[in-house]
Image 1 (spheres, one colour):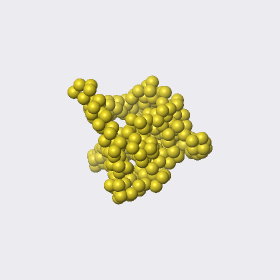
Image 2 (cartoon, rainbow, N blue to C red):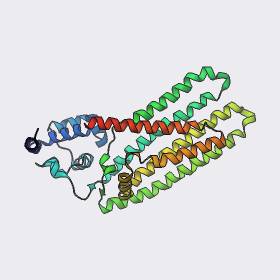
Image 3 (cartoon, helix red, strand yellow):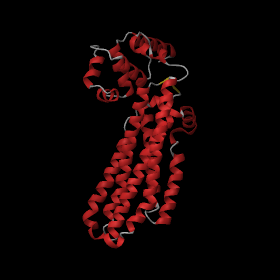
Image 4 (cartoon, helix red, strand yellow):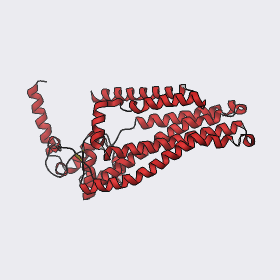
Length: 318
Protein backbone atom coordinates (compact mmCIF):
# COMPACT_ATOMS: atom_id res chain seq x y z
CA UNK A 1 0.00 0.00 0.00
CA UNK A 2 1.50 3.38 -1.00
CA UNK A 3 1.13 6.61 1.03
CA UNK A 4 -1.67 7.94 -1.21
CA UNK A 5 -3.82 4.84 -0.65
CA UNK A 6 -3.17 5.09 3.08
CA UNK A 7 -4.32 8.72 3.15
CA UNK A 8 -7.47 7.83 1.23
CA UNK A 9 -8.29 4.99 3.67
CA UNK A 10 -7.58 7.19 6.69
CA UNK A 11 -9.91 9.90 5.38
CA UNK A 12 -12.63 7.31 4.72
CA UNK A 13 -12.20 5.96 8.26
CA UNK A 14 -12.55 9.46 9.71
CA UNK A 15 -15.66 10.05 7.62
CA UNK A 16 -17.14 6.74 8.81
CA UNK A 17 -16.38 7.56 12.46
CA UNK A 18 -17.92 11.01 12.15
CA UNK A 19 -21.17 9.44 10.89
CA UNK A 20 -21.44 7.01 13.81
CA UNK A 21 -24.35 7.27 16.21
CA UNK A 22 -23.74 7.76 19.93
CA UNK A 23 -24.27 4.05 20.58
CA UNK A 24 -21.93 2.99 17.80
CA UNK A 25 -19.22 5.29 19.15
CA UNK A 26 -19.57 3.90 22.68
CA UNK A 27 -19.38 0.33 21.39
CA UNK A 28 -16.40 1.02 19.11
CA UNK A 29 -14.35 2.77 21.81
CA UNK A 30 -15.28 0.18 24.45
CA UNK A 31 -13.97 -2.62 22.23
CA UNK A 32 -10.87 -0.60 21.31
CA UNK A 33 -10.05 -0.15 25.02
CA UNK A 34 -10.60 -3.85 25.70
CA UNK A 35 -13.60 -3.59 28.04
CA UNK A 36 -16.51 -6.01 28.08
CA UNK A 37 -20.01 -4.65 28.70
CA UNK A 38 -19.87 -6.12 32.21
CA UNK A 39 -16.54 -4.40 32.99
CA UNK A 40 -17.75 -1.06 31.67
CA UNK A 41 -20.98 -1.38 33.65
CA UNK A 42 -19.01 -2.14 36.82
CA UNK A 43 -16.77 0.91 36.40
CA UNK A 44 -19.80 3.14 35.81
CA UNK A 45 -21.85 1.50 38.59
CA UNK A 46 -24.72 0.65 36.22
CA UNK A 47 -26.21 -2.60 34.94
CA UNK A 48 -24.94 -4.40 31.85
CA UNK A 49 -28.42 -3.91 30.37
CA UNK A 50 -27.94 -0.13 30.64
CA UNK A 51 -24.71 -0.31 28.63
CA UNK A 52 -26.40 -2.54 26.05
CA UNK A 53 -29.27 -0.02 25.83
CA UNK A 54 -26.87 2.84 25.17
CA UNK A 55 -24.95 0.92 22.51
CA UNK A 56 -28.13 0.04 20.66
CA UNK A 57 -29.20 3.74 20.69
CA UNK A 58 -32.23 3.04 22.88
CA UNK A 59 -31.14 5.55 25.47
CA UNK A 60 -28.45 8.08 26.47
CA UNK A 61 -26.67 8.17 29.86
CA UNK A 62 -27.28 10.93 32.36
CA UNK A 63 -24.80 13.80 32.33
CA UNK A 64 -22.70 12.45 35.23
CA UNK A 65 -22.32 9.11 33.45
CA UNK A 66 -21.44 10.90 30.21
CA UNK A 67 -18.64 12.69 32.06
CA UNK A 68 -17.39 9.38 33.46
CA UNK A 69 -17.45 7.79 29.99
CA UNK A 70 -15.63 10.80 28.56
CA UNK A 71 -12.86 10.52 31.15
CA UNK A 72 -12.71 6.73 31.07
CA UNK A 73 -12.19 6.58 27.30
CA UNK A 74 -10.20 9.81 26.96
CA UNK A 75 -12.66 11.47 24.57
CA UNK A 76 -14.57 14.73 24.70
CA UNK A 77 -18.30 15.09 25.18
CA UNK A 78 -18.36 16.80 21.79
CA UNK A 79 -17.00 13.65 20.17
CA UNK A 80 -19.58 11.45 21.91
CA UNK A 81 -22.56 13.67 21.15
CA UNK A 82 -21.54 15.42 17.93
CA UNK A 83 -19.96 14.59 14.57
CA UNK A 84 -16.33 14.75 15.61
CA UNK A 85 -13.52 12.32 14.80
CA UNK A 86 -11.20 10.96 17.52
CA UNK A 87 -8.22 12.87 16.10
CA UNK A 88 -10.04 16.12 16.78
CA UNK A 89 -10.68 15.00 20.33
CA UNK A 90 -7.12 15.24 21.68
CA UNK A 91 -7.11 17.85 24.40
CA UNK A 92 -3.99 19.98 24.35
CA UNK A 93 -2.29 20.63 27.65
CA UNK A 94 -3.47 17.59 29.58
CA UNK A 95 -6.19 15.11 30.42
CA UNK A 96 -9.17 16.42 32.37
CA UNK A 97 -10.39 14.28 35.28
CA UNK A 98 -13.50 14.68 37.41
CA UNK A 99 -13.80 13.77 41.09
CA UNK A 100 -15.80 10.67 40.11
CA UNK A 101 -12.91 9.53 37.90
CA UNK A 102 -10.40 10.13 40.70
CA UNK A 103 -12.49 8.13 43.16
CA UNK A 104 -12.92 5.32 40.61
CA UNK A 105 -9.17 5.25 39.95
CA UNK A 106 -8.31 5.10 43.66
CA UNK A 107 -10.91 2.39 44.27
CA UNK A 108 -9.44 0.34 41.41
CA UNK A 109 -5.89 0.78 42.76
CA UNK A 110 -6.93 -0.19 46.31
CA UNK A 111 -8.66 -3.31 44.99
CA UNK A 112 -5.52 -4.23 43.04
CA UNK A 113 -3.37 -3.61 46.13
CA UNK A 114 -5.64 -5.88 48.20
CA UNK A 115 -5.30 -8.70 45.66
CA UNK A 116 -1.50 -8.36 45.61
CA UNK A 117 -1.40 -8.25 49.42
CA UNK A 118 -3.52 -11.41 49.66
CA UNK A 119 -1.29 -13.22 47.15
CA UNK A 120 1.92 -12.28 48.96
CA UNK A 121 0.31 -13.00 52.35
CA UNK A 122 -0.66 -16.52 51.26
CA UNK A 123 2.86 -17.21 49.97
CA UNK A 124 4.44 -16.08 53.25
CA UNK A 125 1.71 -17.71 55.35
CA UNK A 126 2.22 -21.07 53.64
CA UNK A 127 5.23 -21.57 55.94
CA UNK A 128 2.78 -21.91 58.83
CA UNK A 129 2.20 -25.48 57.64
CA UNK A 130 5.94 -26.12 57.53
CA UNK A 131 6.38 -25.20 61.19
CA UNK A 132 5.05 -28.50 62.54
CA UNK A 133 7.81 -31.06 61.98
CA UNK A 134 5.79 -33.98 63.38
CA UNK A 135 3.02 -33.41 60.82
CA UNK A 136 5.16 -32.18 57.92
CA UNK A 137 4.20 -34.93 55.49
CA UNK A 138 0.52 -34.55 56.35
CA UNK A 139 0.59 -30.77 55.99
CA UNK A 140 2.78 -30.72 52.88
CA UNK A 141 -0.21 -30.53 50.45
CA UNK A 142 -1.58 -27.54 52.40
CA UNK A 143 1.85 -25.87 52.25
CA UNK A 144 2.17 -26.20 48.47
CA UNK A 145 -1.54 -25.58 47.89
CA UNK A 146 -1.50 -22.29 49.82
CA UNK A 147 1.65 -21.15 48.02
CA UNK A 148 0.19 -22.11 44.63
CA UNK A 149 -3.02 -20.14 45.34
CA UNK A 150 -0.95 -17.11 46.36
CA UNK A 151 1.15 -17.29 43.18
CA UNK A 152 -1.99 -17.78 41.06
CA UNK A 153 -3.60 -14.67 42.58
CA UNK A 154 -0.48 -12.60 41.83
CA UNK A 155 -0.18 -13.85 38.26
CA UNK A 156 -3.91 -13.30 37.66
CA UNK A 157 -3.70 -9.76 39.10
CA UNK A 158 -0.59 -8.75 37.14
CA UNK A 159 -1.99 -10.01 33.83
CA UNK A 160 -5.42 -8.40 34.23
CA UNK A 161 -6.14 -5.57 31.75
CA UNK A 162 -5.14 -2.29 33.34
CA UNK A 163 -7.78 0.39 33.58
CA UNK A 164 -7.38 4.17 33.97
CA UNK A 165 -4.19 4.09 31.89
CA UNK A 166 -4.84 7.67 30.78
CA UNK A 167 -4.42 8.88 34.38
CA UNK A 168 -1.07 7.11 34.71
CA UNK A 169 0.33 8.32 31.39
CA UNK A 170 -0.90 11.92 30.95
CA UNK A 171 -0.54 15.23 32.68
CA UNK A 172 -3.83 15.82 34.47
CA UNK A 173 -6.12 18.83 34.48
CA UNK A 174 -8.42 19.50 37.45
CA UNK A 175 -11.01 21.99 38.52
CA UNK A 176 -9.54 23.96 41.40
CA UNK A 177 -12.30 22.91 43.78
CA UNK A 178 -11.82 19.23 42.88
CA UNK A 179 -8.07 19.12 43.50
CA UNK A 180 -8.47 21.12 46.72
CA UNK A 181 -11.10 18.69 48.00
CA UNK A 182 -8.99 15.71 46.97
CA UNK A 183 -5.88 16.99 48.75
CA UNK A 184 -7.88 17.52 51.94
CA UNK A 185 -9.15 13.93 51.76
CA UNK A 186 -5.67 12.68 50.85
CA UNK A 187 -4.18 14.40 53.88
CA UNK A 188 -6.62 12.54 56.15
CA UNK A 189 -5.98 9.26 54.33
CA UNK A 190 -2.22 9.62 54.74
CA UNK A 191 -2.60 9.66 58.51
CA UNK A 192 -4.47 6.35 58.31
CA UNK A 193 -1.90 4.85 55.94
CA UNK A 194 0.95 6.08 58.14
CA UNK A 195 -0.74 4.38 61.09
CA UNK A 196 -0.99 1.14 59.09
CA UNK A 197 2.71 1.32 58.21
CA UNK A 198 3.81 2.02 61.79
CA UNK A 199 1.58 -0.78 63.10
CA UNK A 200 2.91 -3.25 60.52
CA UNK A 201 6.54 -2.39 61.35
CA UNK A 202 5.89 -2.80 65.08
CA UNK A 203 4.05 -6.04 64.40
CA UNK A 204 6.87 -7.34 62.20
CA UNK A 205 9.76 -6.55 64.55
CA UNK A 206 8.19 -6.93 68.00
CA UNK A 207 5.26 -9.31 67.46
CA UNK A 208 7.51 -12.35 67.43
CA UNK A 209 9.17 -11.25 70.67
CA UNK A 210 5.85 -11.31 72.52
CA UNK A 211 4.94 -14.67 70.99
CA UNK A 212 8.19 -16.33 71.99
CA UNK A 213 7.66 -15.16 75.55
CA UNK A 214 4.94 -17.82 75.62
CA UNK A 215 7.24 -20.44 74.12
CA UNK A 216 7.27 -22.54 77.30
CA UNK A 217 3.47 -22.66 77.32
CA UNK A 218 2.49 -23.29 73.70
CA UNK A 219 5.69 -24.85 72.38
CA UNK A 220 8.27 -23.87 69.80
CA UNK A 221 6.35 -25.08 66.73
CA UNK A 222 3.20 -23.11 67.56
CA UNK A 223 5.36 -20.02 68.14
CA UNK A 224 6.98 -20.45 64.74
CA UNK A 225 3.58 -20.79 63.07
CA UNK A 226 2.24 -17.67 64.81
CA UNK A 227 5.43 -15.82 63.83
CA UNK A 228 4.80 -16.59 60.13
CA UNK A 229 1.18 -15.49 60.54
CA UNK A 230 2.28 -12.16 62.03
CA UNK A 231 4.88 -11.66 59.29
CA UNK A 232 2.25 -12.29 56.61
CA UNK A 233 -0.19 -9.83 58.21
CA UNK A 234 2.51 -7.15 58.57
CA UNK A 235 3.62 -7.46 54.93
CA UNK A 236 0.00 -7.34 53.73
CA UNK A 237 -0.61 -4.10 55.64
CA UNK A 238 2.60 -2.59 54.23
CA UNK A 239 1.61 -3.47 50.66
CA UNK A 240 -1.92 -2.06 50.95
CA UNK A 241 -0.76 1.16 52.64
CA UNK A 242 2.21 1.66 50.30
CA UNK A 243 0.26 1.08 47.09
CA UNK A 244 -2.60 3.31 48.28
CA UNK A 245 -0.17 6.15 49.02
CA UNK A 246 1.43 5.65 45.60
CA UNK A 247 -1.99 5.84 43.89
CA UNK A 248 -2.83 9.11 45.64
CA UNK A 249 0.60 10.51 44.75
CA UNK A 250 -0.17 9.90 41.06
CA UNK A 251 -3.01 12.40 41.44
CA UNK A 252 -1.56 14.82 44.00
CA UNK A 253 1.97 14.92 42.51
CA UNK A 254 1.03 14.22 38.91
CA UNK A 255 3.67 16.33 37.17
CA UNK A 256 6.55 14.79 39.16
CA UNK A 257 5.12 11.28 38.68
CA UNK A 258 4.81 11.61 34.88
CA UNK A 259 8.36 13.00 34.64
CA UNK A 260 9.81 10.13 36.69
CA UNK A 261 7.79 7.53 34.79
CA UNK A 262 8.92 8.83 31.41
CA UNK A 263 12.56 8.95 32.50
CA UNK A 264 12.61 5.50 34.15
CA UNK A 265 10.39 3.53 31.77
CA UNK A 266 8.68 0.16 32.32
CA UNK A 267 11.10 -0.97 35.01
CA UNK A 268 10.54 1.98 37.36
CA UNK A 269 9.44 -0.39 40.14
CA UNK A 270 13.00 -1.80 40.28
CA UNK A 271 14.14 1.42 41.98
CA UNK A 272 12.04 0.38 44.98
CA UNK A 273 12.22 -3.41 44.64
CA UNK A 274 16.02 -3.64 44.50
CA UNK A 275 16.80 -1.89 47.82
CA UNK A 276 13.83 -3.68 49.41
CA UNK A 277 15.28 -7.03 48.26
CA UNK A 278 18.72 -6.15 49.64
CA UNK A 279 17.11 -5.19 52.97
CA UNK A 280 15.07 -8.41 53.05
CA UNK A 281 18.18 -10.51 52.32
CA UNK A 282 20.12 -8.74 55.09
CA UNK A 283 17.26 -9.23 57.57
CA UNK A 284 17.04 -12.91 56.63
CA UNK A 285 20.75 -13.35 57.34
CA UNK A 286 20.70 -11.40 60.64
CA UNK A 287 17.44 -12.68 62.13
CA UNK A 288 17.39 -16.14 60.49
CA UNK A 289 13.62 -15.65 60.14
CA UNK A 290 13.65 -16.75 56.48
CA UNK A 291 16.07 -17.96 53.86
CA UNK A 292 18.00 -15.09 52.20
CA UNK A 293 17.26 -16.79 48.87
CA UNK A 294 13.48 -16.11 49.11
CA UNK A 295 13.65 -12.31 48.45
CA UNK A 296 15.93 -12.93 45.45
CA UNK A 297 13.43 -15.45 44.06
CA UNK A 298 10.60 -12.91 44.48
CA UNK A 299 12.63 -10.25 42.63
CA UNK A 300 13.47 -12.69 39.82
CA UNK A 301 9.79 -13.67 39.47
CA UNK A 302 8.75 -9.99 39.34
CA UNK A 303 11.32 -9.31 36.61
CA UNK A 304 10.14 -12.37 34.69
CA UNK A 305 6.49 -11.23 34.88
CA UNK A 306 7.44 -7.73 33.68
CA UNK A 307 9.41 -9.09 30.72
CA UNK A 308 6.56 -11.45 29.79
CA UNK A 309 4.04 -8.58 29.91
CA UNK A 310 6.26 -6.44 27.68
CA UNK A 311 6.61 -9.27 25.16
CA UNK A 312 2.83 -9.86 25.15
CA UNK A 313 2.11 -6.12 24.72
CA UNK A 314 4.63 -5.94 21.86
CA UNK A 315 3.08 -8.95 20.15
CA UNK A 316 -0.46 -7.61 20.53
CA UNK A 317 0.53 -4.20 19.17
CA UNK A 318 1.88 -5.72 15.93
